[in-house]
Image (cartoon, rainbow, N blue to C red; front, side, top):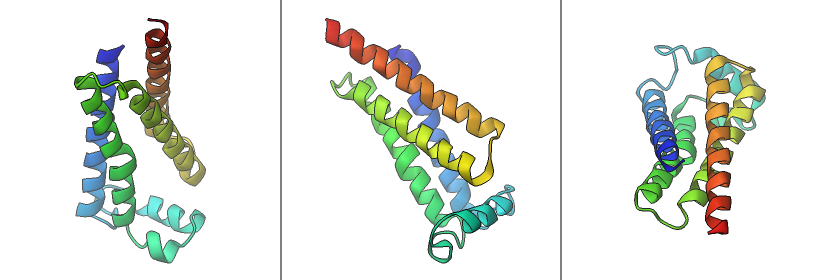
Length: 136
């Protein structure tokens, strides 16, 4: 399970960094098709004139919640730190909550559905490992 968790945390973390950079390079979303998503965020989220004038704040939140946390969890896994599995569990929960928010804003779509499943796999793998380690 540890190998799967390492792959997932690295994949999700690096992907979140890529997504954040994409949001910063083109904060309007025009070049990567995010402009309609920005309008939905403005319509559904609180304080649209503060946080959703462009994608820059969203990029920082993505980086913090799903980039850095996943990479920290990966680091803990590689170092075989005692808190590694709990970090993966938290990361999986954060990812699933992020996707639930995405579903609320713009509905179901293939990418969001896939990432929800990846978060679910992280949670399941972490719970399995935590229980396995508790029995030893």
